[in-house]
Structure formats: C-alpha cells, structure tokens
Length: 167
Image (cartoon, rainbow, N blue to C red; front, side, top):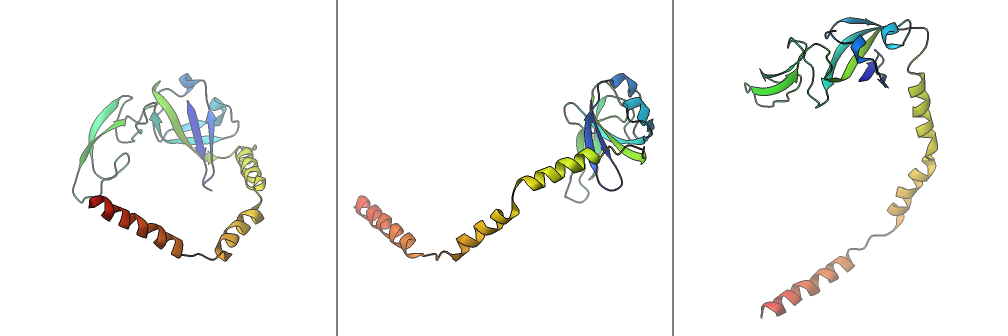
C-alpha cells in the first residue's frame, strides 16, 4: 500500500507501507498514530484514498466495497451541465485489503522532518540543468531572419502539377 503524506504547507511525500493489516478497518476522518506506520511523534488524519483500479474512496459511502452511486459534480465526478446527475463507481470509506493508496494529513509533526528528503531531491533536479544555456537558445532563433518566399514557391509547382494531372 502507498501512503501519501501531506502537510499544511502543501508538501507531500509518498512512502511504501507493507503492513496493511495495521490500517485495516480505519475510516476516512479517523486519527492515526505515526508509530503504527514507523514515524514516531507524528499524528495523521485519513483524508481519502483509492483502490487498485483507481476508484476513489468517499466519506459518505459506508463500508469497504465498491458501490455505484448517483452523484452531481463532486468527488469522483466532474459534471459540467447544471442539474445533471451521473452514476459513478466509488469505494467505501473504510480501509480494506483492496485499498492501494491512502492519503494522510499531518496533524501533529514529530521531531524528525519527513519532507527533508523531498527538498533535497528537488534542489538536485534544479541544479542539474544549467539555466543560462536554456535562455540563450531561444534568443539565437529569434535573431535569424525568417523568409516566407521559399514556402510560396514550393506551393505553386504543386498546384500546377495537379492541374496538369487533371487534364
């Protein structure tokens, strides 16, 4: 199972979690101690998730199984027309063996910063590509004169050839 952990600053980190039995039976909105998933001192709230086929969990659907519900524009449905409703398949609000991803929100942070690795990876990716070279390339293209004459000449013989073939 994948756990996507996010905080109020908009940072998110995805971790792989092997012991799915520890989370089974919890519902969306329940509090979760960080020690149960290996992050001491943290406290999380379950905000949502999805199953292995990508069907989203919904807070208002009870149980573990998939259900086909009639929805307006909301979670799992993007309906543009006013008054239109659609039948969509969603997963219930309870974590089960079928849950592939679980979204957690940090309520109480621990001593260790779990987002520190994500910062270091982001800085390394930005530092790899020199920014000066990327800025120079478009400037060189803009200085070259553009001529429309070759395009017109190339199109004219094609039109004449078609007329000759039609005769």
